[in-house]
Length: 245
Image 1 (tube, helix red, strand yellow):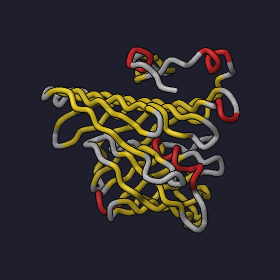
Image 2 (image 1 turned 120 degrees about the vertical axis):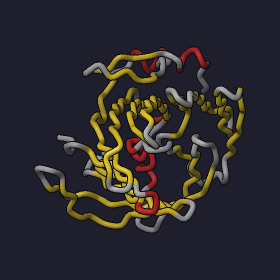
Image 3 (image 1 turned 180 degrees about the vertical axis):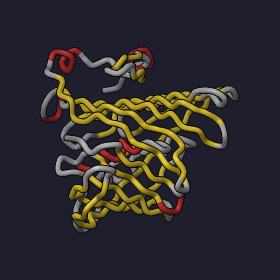
């Protein structure tokens, strides 16, 4: 199944005035009950300095192979002295949350939009910017290697790798839509450890994703909701303001 650009260009208004890129649900999903999976705000730091916030919402509709999980997020950051807003939406199918569609829009000064759609056994992205339009194709690496997507500075995207966590490790094919590329990484479960927030400490499952020489550390709660993401080699840290209830 793939969606038209018209379907994925809708704008939804979420509670609290959060405007995000959204997706129209197919009739069978729209008729089913929509369940809120997670919602929250991350504080984003780079090299120990706060650079902005990431607000997100994840919802789900349907069951089994017809289950559709949709995540929407808005990243408001200051990078290199310039303010920038990035709006993203991701749609997956099935219990394993197989990547189906991704849409991201970057505000001025460097306006950019990317639409990524599944077409058979491949993903095709169309990038539109001031320099023109570029099409890129991402093919399935191996039948047994899941394909996931991680976009720059979006911590909630790591929720979509959680179906593949295993003690022995799992290879993942990771699409990196900005600036564009595809790499193979290894995801491992490390263990449960305390994670401190401003007012409370919780027990969290830590995962490690080794990708392109960098270690992505991900902390999850008991429902696989992302609490914190850290990439030490990039000086990147995203932690939720408060853990989910």
